[in-house]
Image (cartoon, rainbow, N blue to C red; front, top):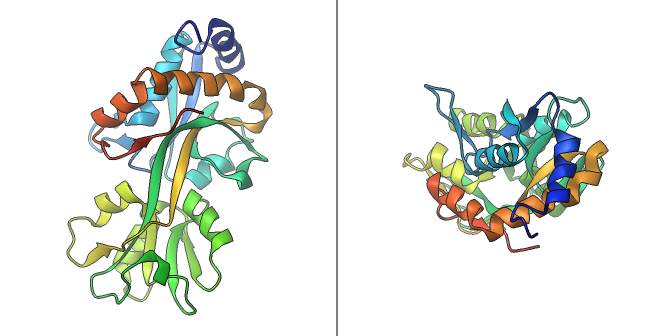
Length: 252
């Protein structure tokens, strides 16, 4: 990687494969507040995913355009519809028929919130008959839990925000709600009626992603990600967005 950018030939491959009419379309999942945020007043986007998108576009001499989504499931649903060129998604094998991944750039935790008066104390107590957990449909933790749980009932809303709202609005809706730790903190952290359970549902790898029909570019995109981890760009972007507790993924 002599150029510090993933190598000139690799960058040229990305330029040829991604840039159309001088632009690259980036899918931004606003359901994961630890990675991407949008200012309600100005509409401005920020976060590590947005920083990586802008950096890649600049290195390829392209203009970044952003297609925002309320949840990861909807990003994946559009993977075969030519609505975006590069996305930022949790790595999950169930999506590989439509998604090709780079190496991971950050690790995040999925956790669980309950009501303050809940008898539950740890996530290990959730998988019992009769217990219900709200999740965002198609999220990484939904996919993980769908394979891992035996007795727990998963109730699905279309986006993380919808699952949080459903849990807040209806005491009978579920026993708990799952989400990315930072998104849960933002939605529930200052409300004494709710608390986090001890433990985590999963540690999730977040990667850049391509539609499967561009899978040949995934190694080149991985080279870009590895270079941005190695030169400290990912760490700086996390810190500048206030996500100092998130962990940069190990070198691939």
